[in-house]
Image 1: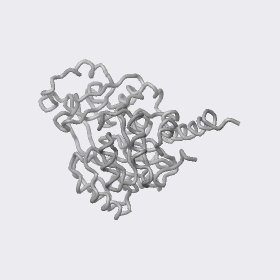
Image 2 (image 1 turned 120 degrees about the vertical axis):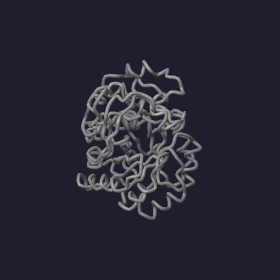
Image 3 (image 1 turned 90 degrees about the horizontal axis):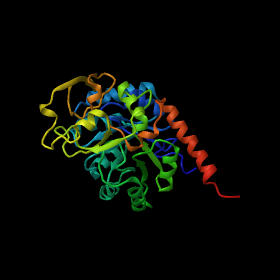
Image 4 (image 1 turned 45 degrees about the vertical axis):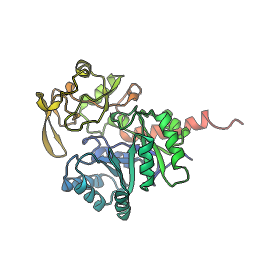
Length: 333
């Protein structure tokens, strides 16, 4: 079956690395145990000892392979060393140049490299660097969005670009169920990456209020309201909460640095204050005015009706896709 595995995993389903720590060991292990590719998220600062701990904790919960996502816009050299040293199955990269040297270094450690891109030009560079797979992110995606193209137009261009190379193409942005999966396959992808759907799972480390809002709200907006000082020039898609609607016209010279503290949180073992307009999403440890914090989500939000175990999300998609292909797309007798 063409819809089966990628990169040696049983199923062509990837759980996106949800930042800053929402895809922790519990979620990643649940995804790995269900036969899909789970991705941890490395801290956005150097802490190689913590990265090792994160990987090792995940290994106590699953004997299956998994990966970790690194945002190249933040300090990462020491973290990368620890990751390659631990020999996770997959290194996922985002928001920065995926160089030939980096790919070579990972391959020498036996680690596969999968950058996420948001444009045709970025895909070209990644292919030239010799990566193992490319995640193509459409503008529909939740969280930080790298490009302006919709998935339905960008994906087939990247598929054509790498045809004949041994590079798997994975679709991301607005996919939550078997219909999105089968649509991505029709556009030439070998797999799909889901963020918002895995955010709304029992094992995700998101705050219960955040999870509830994912079910309640049906609208998202593409904005640069949150985290302007910490991560400039990084637009993102968030839930259109009452807080967001009230503040979305904030003048562009304003940012989180001089704003009041609205809560506290522990991220990757470090205590932090959360200021208004900080890009920090509420995780399970967060206290304070949760409703006024950033809540990233993709355009598919109206299709998510319940919080499910991660393993069930995967099985529903896999079995649903099989059924859909057999019933709607099987050759006529």
